[in-house]
Amino acid sequence: MAALGNHTLNLCKSSALDFSEALYAKSTPSKASVFRGRGQKLEICGGVARSSFLTPIKAMEAPETTTHANGRPGDVLTNDCSGLSGKSTLKMSTVGNSSNIVWHKCSVEKSDRQELLNQKGCVIWITGLSGSGKSTLACALSRALHARGKLTYILDGDNCRHGLNRDLSFKAEDRAENIRRIGEVAKLFADAGVICIASLISPFRKERDACRGLLPEGDFIEVYMDVPLQVCEARDPKGLYELARAGKIKGFTGVDDPYEPPLNSEIVLQQREGICDSPCVLAETVISYLERKGYLEA
Image (tube, rainbow, N blue to C red):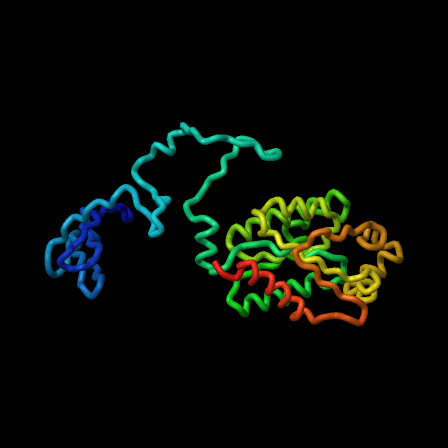
């Protein structure tokens, strides 16, 4: 049954006509209408929807359950409302300040999304001093992977502060929260099957390791931009080192705040004064790693 305005309609099926729906109107519409379904003519006349051939036959009821092509039970709606009764045997959890929450598992999993995209979701975490070329590498890497038909997304430190983290300052606790949030978002992208490229200074090992711990083993790929401070300061693309040296910016990494280099990065990209590979060459180094580890195929 279906409702249309103030009229009640019966949904019917005519196997002889080979079209899936015909309508039988219990009340008379004020005006006749003509429709077409798979080349067959359907007329509404005097409250009755009929074909010009045979009287429609009532459709068979759909089965209550269904199964996906991969064999797993589907997430389907049925007439059984027992799951909405308020009685639940699910185990409640408390995470941080959130209590009485339950993780809802879906039948479409990470492996399904990866198969759809023909790639493996992961996080490429680019860390280094300001001016070391993190954002430049991220864009070159995203472009090169896009050219190979791979789906990526960049989480740039400054970009995230335009929206997601706009409420955070550059105090120590806010910088830590900035990294935590980006780590959680990066985890979601990886779970979606996307190759997520996070580009931010992230100066402390503890915070980077915490983001690594959010992902399955091997899915966090740390890329260290090993560029000396003097080279970064000579570049100073945003003019931040000059402001920090003048005392106009406090707690600037590399000037009056420390940077802890990674101890066991998956990839180290060294650049020295006078020796600087192009962003495309550096991106190919990262892509070679992804290929060896099987991330560019499902």
